[in-house]
Length: 359
Image (tube, rainbow, N blue to C red):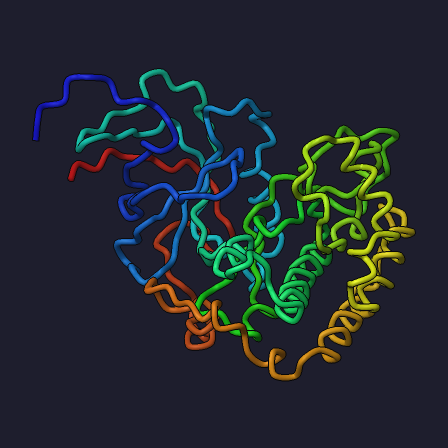
């Protein structure tokens, strides 16, 4: 290999190193959407079977460094304390004083660290983004039965978040993951929230004006008018006839008139009824999660019974990664995962040192 004489470019794709003399950063996650935080595959020297990720805020994105997406994730995970399958499992949390960057076998510490208290979290989670599932279909769409199963899974995850005292405000297929191999039961009961970028505590006092937050495609119509969002805005999990539109005013018009569109009429009647109910529910108001779940289940029960218990053939995919998390949890339900880090199970804090690991 030729000798390297240049400076290593300090970009998120070049982050590497070792944390707590145990967790080795393997590679960045090839995310299909742009976020204000970066995720990296992590190898645990003591428990290599774990599916771990390092989550840190991007240093090349302008953001409030006191309230990043990672800060919001840590707040939620510290409340739920690894008690629900709908949230990543906290393994280690803390701060990184500086980063290590590597390229072509060479590694170097960050030249001019400007973020000495950069938050970090090592989590265990699934690695299949729900938004990637339509890519396996020939026509880029999922059967209505599978879509309802995904809706049930996302709803259960959001209900767990609401019970913990938070509102998501960024509900999209790219904010959730699912374990593989895919099963109808796994989709309906094992969806995990992976993106907490816009999470806020709930209930809160409604503000007079709230700046737009989220994405043009998936945000609630209340976000376009500067209104406070709540649980009812998290529940609008519907088809998007405006997905190819880029103009904001056109998107707002399509969202406002959606209940009178042909796309809306093709939805199951239970979903149409839920949409109208959520549309009329004030953002800060509480909702009846059980009643909404029953409507989803009723809509699914009226569909093809064969597709209720199995998935379409193009979703028969497997990843050769590791033991599925839920299966391992059942096997080790009487044991605690030993991480070797202080307060690991409770989302412990502290300063984590990122070391250069020469290979």
